[in-house]
Length: 253
Length: 220
Image (cartoon, rainbow over all chains, first blue to last red):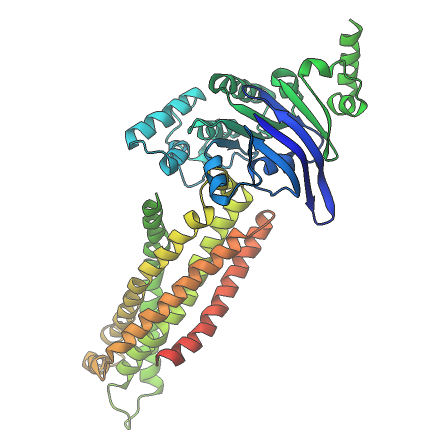
């Protein structure tokens, strides 16, 4: 479980996060949603330590990440996996080498064991056969799946995904969503996903946090969104006229 | 993992530069020899002067300083753009999230790789410059090869070779660390990576020129 307490983050005079407090639960896909520029990515970067919060606490199962020493943070990060918006695969390494990279760095396994583990992760994301290819030779959806395989190779307790569906077609996005959801349940991870994708919100959102202009505007589950009276949330989720009409039709029934 | 990276960098930054170093050194050696023969040699000068000056110029300045200036362009832009691209495509963030010390993992093998291979490049460059000079003697018939041999062997000071290698070690550090810094600290997108690459080459070239003055004074 990850608990965030009164988290503030400012860049010079501009306050981006304005006292966010929330809980991300174990074994669930926790979604952070909000408009572009609302502070979602800044929140995630504060959670993983790429940014230092101005004030507040980030507790990983009760351990305050913000106040940890550099060495403690390095150890803590071995329990984390992250999937970046751009996949962030290492260009000079093959798919297999990318997935083996965390194992090469931090595990005491033999080469054979590391390779077996990497192949298992690739199999888990349906990429067996692509292990000898380089990131530049595979599609965007495959790159995201390689990033997922790499992120889970060390069996992390916490998985962070920054807009995993950006740039993907709706069908591939569903594949990625299903994969993230099933992996979360299978390994009982705390998964946090930043997303704009409404399919993800309605499909796998077990704990949804809506960020509006740097503060937590709403928190709940996907089934509660339909009946929410929060105007900012409904304006964001049902942005188009078509979606508004669909919502009205469903709620009338 | 570090060892693997170190060997890869030696290959990428050092071994892959041997071709250009040999090519440039061959022609510069040849041109220096021709210039010395045509412009300096006279009945009042000893017949070994062209060979002697060619050796001294190659050893004291070209193979260490000028060759490092050339490598600052080739290797420097490579390092800055590679690390800069890794920064803007979040590959460095990915390393940090994994708990890897990204600066140590990415930059240290490059510096050590350059420091290791630079003496080899200096020696190859000097040797190839002399081969170029012999080319003018044997193929171009600019001067008798015996005169050239006499000049190359005349009053050789072994310290000059060490001086060249010591200077090149300083330059190797500049060539690898300055572009790595520019690449590592880049922010923004591809335009900024290009700018960082240019800045890295300019800064490392200027630093090499300045430090050359001090090192030459210090070691002579």
